[in-house]
Length: 265
Image (cartoon, rainbow, N blue to C red):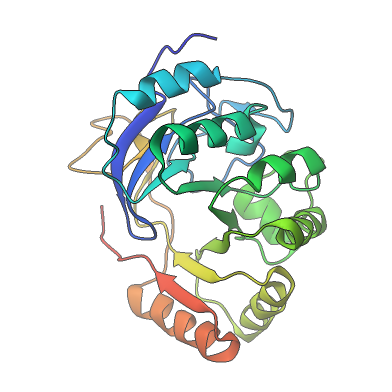
């Protein structure tokens, strides 16, 4: 497949990872095993759990070379869907490292981590951030709207298997849509004890969700990137609620917990 739109974008200013250069291994049609209610890409165009090569590794590296000398803190694989769906994920990560010498990060929903080949390829990254929004199976269905064969149990099993072989930094990213009660807090702590991340990143959807595919959703929002196109505002929590939750998690587990700076779009 030839590159028909920019597969390298940014740099993006990330509250989690600093100055980040984005790599999109998925391409023009948004493809994911989730269709999250808050997704900044809009409604996912192709729901799938099948791996394939969407963008040739060589095409990505040619485009990446134009950004030299890569004055960024990290090169991040994310973009137009779930990056582990890219069958050339390992090739891409290794190519980025060889070309740029920069740290590599993959943002993943962890739905493919029961695949040993995916775990092997993902282990080449320096940093991996796994999504954990749904604390129970019903929440997973409501918030992340996964494809039919994805389960919370399967996701947790995959993350645990990956953690056993990964030597880099593993983080958990969680989107908080409403204040948590005591049961939710307890459940989250239980799940963290299984995953054992180095860091937890809490966020809440202050930006509106576009109702159609939006390439601008890959990066930082400035001004009004969607113009007059339809959007919907997702319910979120206030900054103090997020900070209080972070303090509880950190105080109980000793894990570093960071919160997104809340700016209303």
